[in-house]
Image (cartoon, rainbow, N blue to C red; front, side, top):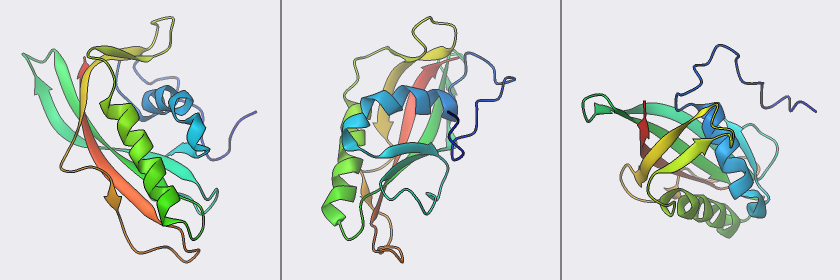
Length: 152
């Protein structure tokens, strides 16, 4: 069943590029224990309450004679209503998943038809922090910016 909040991946997307759909597909199975829905975009939609949103950002550019790209992305996590600790726990869990990968890990499908090798993921600045005051439904947001070094 197609999720209306998550449109299908465009067929013209180059297969070996770091992209939002690629990162979504890689992250989802690793954060299922949080119970949060993983979506693309920023700000998060009004529902569901507990979400992890990914938004690509300008990165640091090419390195090592253009063998690697250093894209950046933002992760925004929102917890349940009136639950600061829930939002923070989701954000810290995602942070641990991203920072504790082995060196040179694969982000992509297991058949190696689509994906990139990732050399590292690091913070752009500090770890997850509260983004704003709670929204109109008393839900807290935590955000963190990351940079990855990926194969081109």
